[in-house]
Each structure stands twice: as C-alpha cells, then as structure tokens.
Image 1: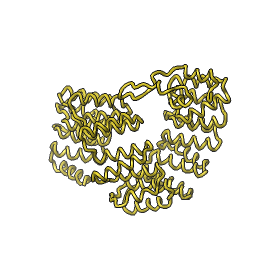
Image 2 (image 1 turned 60 degrees about the vertical axis):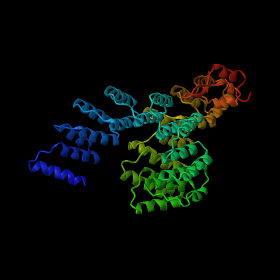
Image 3 (image 1 turned 90 degrees about the vertical axis):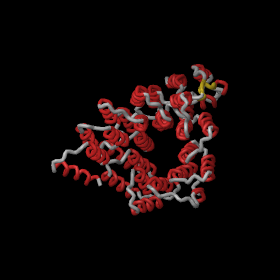
Image 4 (image 1 turned 120 degrees about the vertical axis):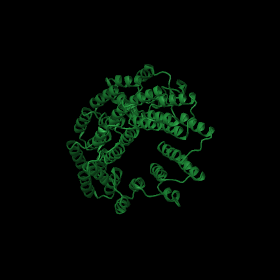
Length: 512
C-alpha cells in the first residue's frame, strides 16, 4: 500500500513531527520500489543520521534495478559515512556488477573487500566465475575456479553449473564434462536448476536424446519439475522437430501455468504448425489475467502470420507498438521476418523503415532480417545502403549478417560487392562459418581466381577467420596439427601458417 505510506509520511510532516531515520528508510524503500529512483536518492542524501540500513536498502533496490551508476555513488556515500557492506551485501553488489558486465567495478569492490579483510565466500567466488562466463571469458572463469580451490573454498553445485553451462555453450565439451565428473566425484547432488541448464545446453548442441535422458534422470531422483523444466522440454522438442513426443513427456506433469509457460507454449504451437492454437492460447492467457510481455507479443504475431491472417497481424503489431512503449527489438524483428516469409517483402521493409524513423529499439538481428528481405526481393543496392546505415549508427554486423550478404552476392556473381564485404570481415575480425567459407572459396576460385579477392581469402586464412573444419576437409589441416594448450584454452591449431593458403593457391584452389 505504497500510496498510503507516502500519504502518512506527508501527514506526519504536516502535523509538525520530524521523521526519524527509521521513517525515512521506509519512505526511501517505497520510492525505489515504485521506480522513483531520483526521489529515493534525494531522501537518502537529506537524511541527517543515516544508518547501515539506509544504505543497505538503497543498494538492494538499486541492484534489483541494475542501476550501476547510482550503486557506485551510494557505495561512495556509505564509505564516507563510516559504514561498509556486510558479506551478503558484497555478494549482491558483485552479482550486480558482473551481471551487467562491469568487471572493472567488480575488481574495485574486490579491492575494498580485501582491504576490509572480508573473506570471499563460495557465493562470491561463484558470482565472479559466472560474471566471466556471461562475458564468454572462460579462460578467466577457469582461472578463478583454480584460485578458489587453492584458497580452500569448495565449489558447490551452482559453481559447477555455471562452468558447465559456459563450456558447453562454447562447444568445449571435453572440459564441460570434466567439470561434470568433478561435481559427481565430490559428492554434490545435482539440483533442479542444474538439470534444467543441462537439458537446455544439450538440446541447443543437438544432443536431443541426451537431453531427454537428463529429464528422465531428474524424475528418477524425485526432483519436482518446474516451469523452466517444462520450457526446456518444449525447447528440446521444437529444436528436434519431434513434436509428437510432447504429450508423452508431459503426461502427469503438473506445472503451474505462469507467464513463462504460456510464452513457451505459444512458441511451441507456432513451430509445431498450430498457429491458430497459439492465437487461442494468447486469448486464454489474457482471460486468466496475465499481462503479456514481449515474448507473448512475438508468439501472437507469429501465430497470426502462420494462420495467414497477415493484415490482422499488421494491425495488431501497430496496436502493440502504440500501447506498449517497452516493446523490444525482438517484436519488430518478428513481424518483419514473418512478413518476408509470407511474401510481403514490401510491407515488411515499410514497417522496418518506419521503426527506424520512430527510433524504435532495433538490434543486429533486426537489421539482418531486413537486409535478407531486400536481397530476396532483388533490391541489392538498398540492402547494401541499409548495411552501411547499420554500421553508421554503431550496430556492428555479426557473422550471420555477413553470411546472408556474401551468399547472396556470390549467387549473383557480384565480385565487387563480395570484395567490399570481405574487407569489412577482415577489418572486424569476424570468423565465417563452415558453409559460408566453402561457398565463398568455390565462388572465388571458380570465377575470379586472378582477382584480389584471392589475396583477401589468404589474409582471412592467416587471421584464423576461416574454420579449421573447412581446411581439414580440403586436406590442408590434419588432426596432428591440433595440440592441447591447457585445460581452459581447449584445443586449437598449434600454428596457422600462410602455407595452408598458399598451398590452396598453388594447387589450383578447391577440389585439387
């Protein structure tokens, strides 16, 4: 009853009472909870005798809001007043900084902890490891794990879950499974979160049967599946395309239907070829009082487009954008992508250009989908202009952007555009995938073996931007050239030599 709290506080002042620190702490907490961060900070600064709880309340709320800038300011105020965070508060602060990728601030906080003699708990170590995992700095995550063990702090299930997830996502499976062995040998009992993460990781790497085996193991351990388990199962079924499995898997499974479950089901119905069911489910969700989020909107738009209700989907999208200022790039991307699939490229590009004009949030996926639509519509010049605009507004193209454009220009045999893009790939140090590399190499050596594009290909080889898998298939890289560097560096080529690329040139290119 936040409104009445603020009203009571105002009445207190009006009747001549001076609010003490306890009252001001309550009001400050309410202001943070209703999103009035500026007023909450103002109350804290104007409190004449702040106590430890004053700063603790402010920091807890700011960390929940991921407001790193104000977190740093409040820590400074706290220290100047002679107060210091306790162990639990340090853990919350570390988690906030690491979650937001602010490793420099996390190190500063570590320095303060060391100065105060605060020992790192298993939670603090795990937060740091997970922070580097989020940044895909697995070398540092592994290094911290080693330091953690050396300092006599035993990793727990959460620590190992983070490490296994990170190395699986990086496709460094041998290291991931070595951590799994350690977890089991140390006698830790895998919890529900661990099983959910493992199901999700295994399904994303294409090991669908293994993911289902993990789910069976979860039931054998008598762990009660939750909504995230259900969503992980849905993801496994959708990625594998084995949609008929779902009824058997969830038979007897009781999961509370929260927003996450509804969103997962919306996605499942769209991918399984039941778009009308997705639309009906969305309406059911509204009837039950759930407030849709961006994932819900995407499910609805995909359902409408899948049911060939294109005009209705466009109208719904426009209504969503008008009434929901927090709509993210995923929603804009979804409508553009589905319209392109439905053959309505012109309307898709029209909506995308409007999104640019209205300054809606758009990301690299949004731009790449629009570029693909223009290329499919034969509007190559417009596609390249959009690509240039994308770079100009600091949305860096990714590997998929270059894949879409390079494959299209190879198909058109447009060597001029291919060379331009290759130079951008080299400058950005983007590693191309196996399929794109093969197609590109064949195109260059078949039609333009005397052009400067060959030199660009050689440079890409020397920079490691061409996958080793391709060179191995061409007979230019053998397994003997792979050497283990260390546990956390994985297996990498011992040397990338210009000789590999020169061999390709001297022997007439692909197929020799």
